[in-house]
Amino acid sequence: MSKKPEIIEREKRILKLLSEGIRPMDICNQIAKEFDVSPRTIERQYQNLSKELGENTEEARQEARLMTEAWLREAYLLAKEKEQPKGMIDAAKEYNRLKGVYDDHSNEVAPPKVIKIKQVDSSASLKVVGEPEDVD
Image (cartoon, rainbow, N blue to C red):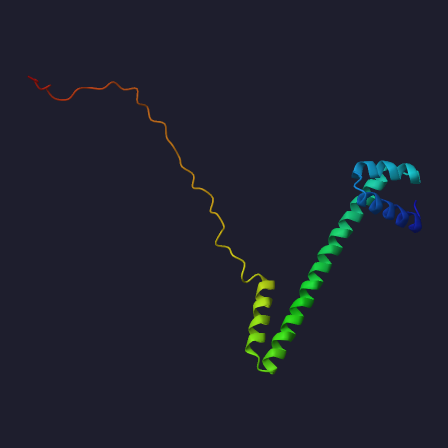
């Protein structure tokens, strides 16, 4: 079983090789040889590291969004207190833009309607109705 310092060192190597543009499979094979472990071990560690990075990124994005919302609310209240309508409007617009109120959904394209075509049997013979007129 690997010790914590070795795991941390492998994670550093994974990130370094990723930043150099090395393919994940090559990273797993290279680090497995360096640390004398199976490539599957490094692959699992790579997957866990990728998952953590994704979660951390989303968490940081959400935290920044919440902080910005708080600042905009504060800016709105401050402008209201100082009786500055332009500041109130600007803060409200930014807050609504952040919340997606102004997202334009009018460009969404509806899926095309399905046209059903029935094949008709047109192999019947034609009959002449009525008498032909004499043409002189």
